[in-house]
Image (tube, rainbow, N blue to C red):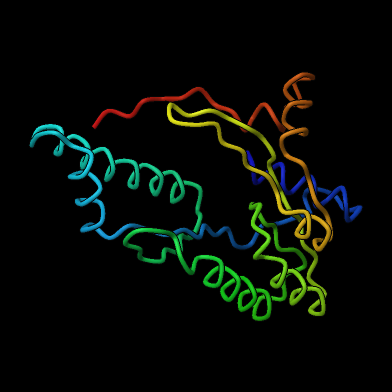
Length: 193
């Protein structure tokens, strides 16, 4: 459903029919913990063997469920191995996106991020004639431990060809029952293993 929303947004901005707007490559870039790091994480937060087994299994299942969902939508995954923190993902993404844009002569690259580190990629794509569409989210939320805030980089919003504030678009779309927005949300189905 998000892909359909993107097709509609690009077609609206380019003044062409949605039927003439195609998505050629869908990619997901992320860090992925080594199994050893997952074991360490589960061990540090467990009181006994049973709790350790449950936590380790939960961490592995979370990775697999995410990957299953990505694969079911034809999304290519690019992972960078990590032990403690996610390092080098931005450079992996930037190099891969630039290389794919040059070799495939993309008209658009759509970024779903808030990270200002991607300004360099955007400025490198511009001379290729490649436009950029940014889907950014700005919101606050609370966890059991603290209040969190996520926002989209101001310089990134300025650098891209088109910037969408997805928080506002979704809130408005849900209020008026916009079919494109409503389709992005499906009831949570707990998968039984």
